[in-house]
Amino acid sequence: MARIPVVQNILSANAALASDVRGRLDASGVFALNMMASPGAGKTSFITATIRALGDSLRVAYVDGDIETTIDAERIDALGVPVVQINTGGACHLDANMLSLALPQLPLDQVDLLIVENVGNLVCPAEFELGTHLNVLIASIPEGADKPYKYPTMYRGVDVLIVNKIDLLPYVPFDLGYFKRGVEVLSPGLTTFEVSCTTGDGIQAWVAWLKERVTHGSPR
Amino acid sequence: MHELPITEGLLNLALKHANQAGAKRITQLNLVIGQLASVVDDSIQFYWDIISKNTIAEGAKLEFRRVPAVLHCWNCEAEFSPNGRDYLCPQCGSARVKVVAGDDFLLESIDVD
Image (cartoon, rainbow over all chains, first blue to last red; front, side, top):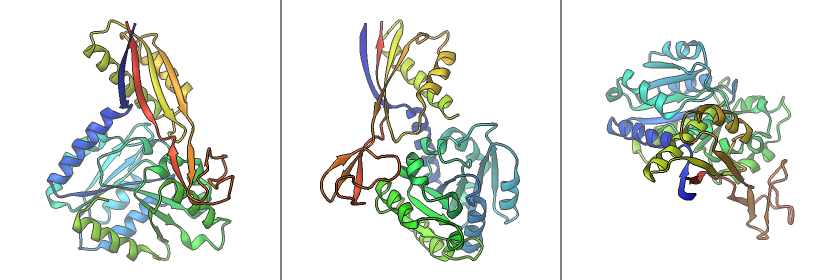
């Protein structure tokens, strides 16, 4: 019997593919976002609001991951941006290989910003990096303020936090201080935008920040 | 559900290292999983028993070493594990704490014949 040291991340094969995806995105000058959230947090509404607010300032493309249906892809397709639908057929998250296979279906040389909408889920997507430049987590007020504590893996691995449906704060019991304390421990100094896709609050601030990031590159 | 691809990743990683070492059989995988990683041991074991069949890792034992989450208080320097409700320091009540352990998600080593 012998013991062989390995000391590698269990998902290092996915990490290698993610690194390949990142290289291809960078070679085409594409900045990419991995949008994650629970089902119903408002991912597609937020992406729609983002694309509308960007107007002609950036050329956007969209990849949608869902277990079934093309409902979200059709909503974004109606905005006139290139869309690729990935139906995961039961898988609860996108992985780097799925995104890798989707890239050749997009005109990457004519794209500045790729928005990837992950499967609605606060558990599994957190474990699988895609090769995108920023992990964006969309939380929403009706979900409740305990989510950072219940899903620490997701809140640990995020680069930007969107708190959506902020207009519902007066109507829903949601302890914003408790929520923010949990976030601060898991991701200190996390860039956060409070927004409402219904009233439009906060969307301009987010889009201005995003444009700056896409234009000046620096991924972190 | 994400335990299936995780288990596949585990099997491939173990087989790669066993082959490189010219091993005939893998008898045990030593895993280090932090409390902040969302992985269910039983679920990995379930998939493992299925997908390791007819490989040199069939029947290998999965040894999980669970690393508890540890938080450090900036205010009073206490170290503690979260109580499941919040991350406040139990000693001084401060919210100024940082995570110092619990993110692990590693295949540390394999035992082979």
